[in-house]
Image 1 (cartoon, helix red, strand yellow):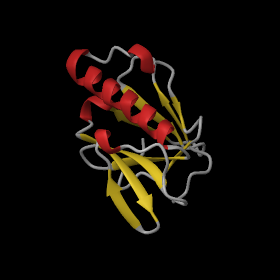
Image 2 (cartoon, one colour):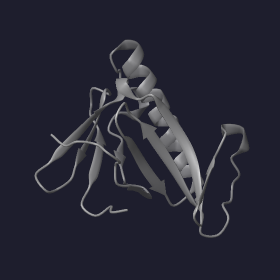
Image 3 (cartoon, helix red, strand yellow):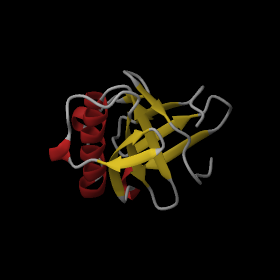
Image 4 (cartoon, helix red, strand yellow):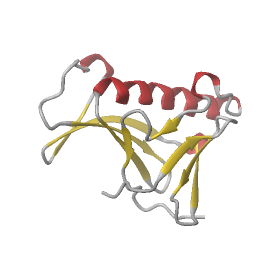
Length: 131
């Protein structure tokens, strides 16, 4: 999947992920509409779901940790170089999504979060429209 020229930011209000595709289109993903957040490992052509209690410090060679956010009409996935980076990102997205749903999105410790920095890359969102 393509990753070139896409940048994702958590807006200061803590309620919206904004993806700048660097082609004149900006896509906004309201965190209050996240229906699920998945932590997945892609090993060769197979995908495995990870429970928080089963996270291991080392991945098999060539395995890729992925965090996927499910929205009503699409899934937004992020691939990471390390399991620790993916775990940190998932924890932050869990907190940001819960906050956006519960009390209008106080950003808390996720304020200013930017992906794909620090080892993450944005995978192509599936079936998402642009604005």
